Image (cartoon, rainbow, N blue to C red; front, side, top):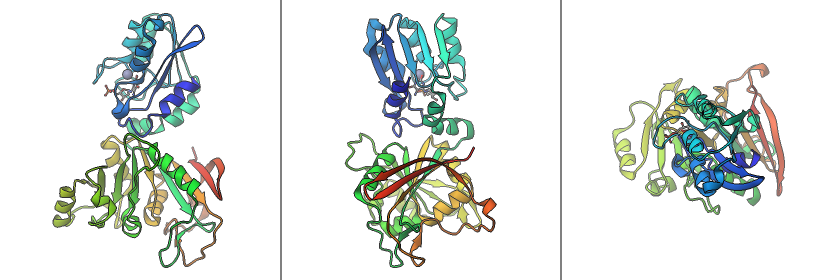
Length: 357
Ligand code: AOF
Ligand code: ZN
C-alpha cells in the first residue's frame, strides 16, 4: 500500500481535476503491475497497472491508493476493470469523495465476490488526496503557502534586493514543490518586483504547473517573463470587477486566461479566489507570496500548509516583511499551525506546518 501511495504521488500536480492515484498488483508475493494516474487525469491508475499485469492479475491483490471508480465517465469504471481481470482482493485506504463514486466502487467489487480491505494507511492517503477532497467537498483547492526569508522574516532589503536569501539547495527544493502542485501563484506586487517566470527548472517535468497572478487591477508587467511566455505555460490572472478594457484585451491577446473574482474591503476576497480556482478544477495551489497576498490568505484562514525556508541572515526592520499587515490585535486571533517537518537544506532550514484541525 505504501508503494501504491508513493506511485500515486508521482502524478501530483499533473492529474487535476482528477486525483493522483497509484496502483500496485501483487500475485504470490511478486509485483506484477504498477500504474499511476496519467497526466491530465486519464487513463486512471488501475487499467495501467492491469495492463502490465496481463493474465497474472487473475487471483492477485490490487493495492489502490483511492477507491476504484464506479462511474462511466471519460473511461469505463476501474472497479469493472478489476472485476474483469479476475482480481481476488482489493486493498485501499479511503473512499472516493466524488459523488459519482463515494462507496459505489467498493460495493461493486464486493458484489462481484472480491475481498475488499479499506482503511490501510488512511492518514497518508488523506494527506495525499487532500486537494482532491477539498475540491470535491468544499469547491476549493489545497493551498500551500511558501515563504523564503531571512532569520527575521524579511524577503528583501529596503532597496528591494532579494537575490538570494536562501541557498541553491532550498531553491531547488522549491522547484520540486512547484512540480507537485497544479499551479504556482503570486500577488501582483511580486510579479512586478521580481519579474518571476514561476516555472519548474532542472527537474525534467513533462508538464509545467500553470502560473496564477492575483491582481485586482490587472497590473502585471506587459513586457515581463510571464507575458513573454504566456503561450508556452498558461498564465491565469485573477482580477477584480471592471478591469481596464485595454489591459483585458492585451492580456487575452497575449494568451492569458482572465478570471474575475469578488473584492472585499479593497482586496480580492481570498475565499472567492480559491472557489474560482476550484471551479476551474485545480486541486493543489502553491502560493509564493508576496507579503500582501500571504497576509490576506492567512487572515482568511485559507492556508492549509505553510512551508518556510529560513536563512541565517538578519535584515532588520527596514526590510520587506514576508507577511504583510494582518490587522491583528490579539494573539488568540493569530492563525496557528502545527509543526509537521523540519530539515536542514544546505545553509538553510525548511520548516513545514499544517493547519490545526
Ligand atoms: C480511479 N483511479 O486513477 C483516478 C480516479 O472524468 P473521469 O472519468 O476520468 O473520472 C474522474 C473521477 O475518477 C475523479 O473525480 C475521481 O472520482 C476518479 N479518479 N479513480 O479509480 C484513478 N484518478
Ligand atoms: Zn477509475
